[in-house]
Length: 165
Image 1 (cartoon, one colour):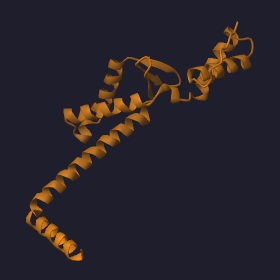
Image 2 (spheres, rainbow, N blue to C red):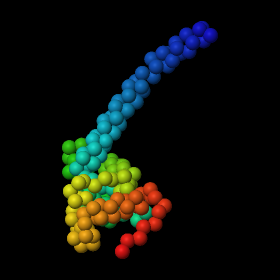
Image 3 (cartoon, one colour):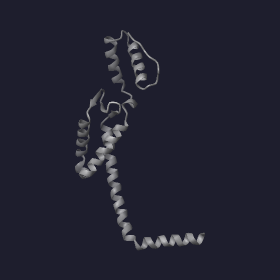
Image 4 (cartoon, rainbow, N blue to C red):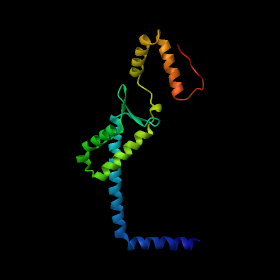
């Protein structure tokens, strides 16, 4: 068994020596691809650090969150993504194919971020409670309870039925 292993290793070394120029080319190509992949990941990270978008698979709508939720149509979302990528086109010198790859990866990650997994900021919750309290409910605690029950229903945490006047 040990003889076979030594022969195998020597054969591999011989093949590497004979094809070393090809291996160098492959190595440099892999390094270039790795750099492109790193720059793509960097742009995607920048995008999600500055933008908060979610997706609702039930309605096929995109939602933007900046202290308030706002529905965005797919065309507008694609425009926002491509405009963002264009800002960095000169720095990273993207070609159109790379631009499309980055756009697709960003769009896929947004579609993976369900709106149901988002927890709103405190200021957003306070705005909603402030709207519900004088307009619909006589006390703030009723508004809070209503929001809690509504959240449980949306997230399908309960099978109960609720009736409110």
